[in-house]
Image (cartoon, rainbow, N blue to C red; front, side):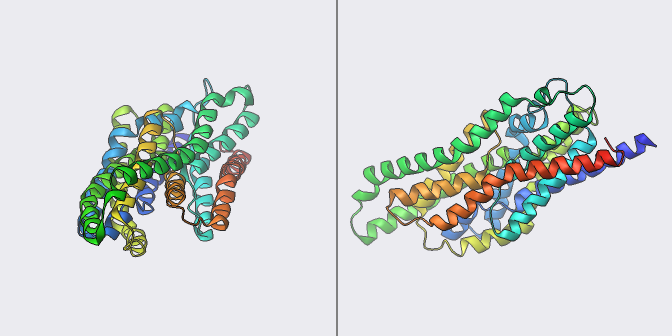
Length: 342
């Protein structure tokens, strides 16, 4: 009976992990700049962008997946199916709250926060587990520092990149004809920059891969099954972009028709470089946070006004994400333990 319950829970985790991959694709806005510029047809952009994101998730997400699915755990600690279930449910609840508030929250912050809360309650409710060793606090510190440094780095890289391109190229253009010709050349550079960005969005958006890594590390599935589900996640992130993400992309693209392709190249290149660096370091970061600060960096470099009130509201929710997700995750796991699941 216990085995059948465990099998059922693992099956639920697998379905939720794959659904999370679909949701990651459904909420990806990276293609908006490309669609807004009208470089390629909408359907072609969705297909190419979806393939790039799936490719990144399948081939480059393992470092980040391992961090979420194993490295953040303390020595000798392994996920149980109930722990993973509590992490997934609490992460989803907070993200839904953020969606209703109209705030682009980080699924990465939410997932890691939930893991923290669950592990603390796990250590307090399971005999012989020390809260001081239940987590790999060194790895957790690396992740949190990555959350703070990656947006700031995005701002700085964007600011510097714009200044360099403006000095060596943009400011030398004379007349409307030269500017229009230059921006048309940037259209195709934008195409490459967006596809490059999509690869690293898929690679770093590895919460779903982390769940499967946790299932693997707890010996619920074998390595062959793990890679099968990684490929499935790559396919579902593509499906998420193609069938649902199109609405987000089209909506945002409609507000970007007057945006210069050169600005899009700078924003996408900057965010992609930050995501690539973090992915190789195995650090899950927030793409939405990075791109927001890249936009701020671009506005500062162009001496444009910044929406400080809106930024303050986002910062408040970003700051709250980790502790709220931790409390939700810990509370849910405590409820499960209370009812005899552990």
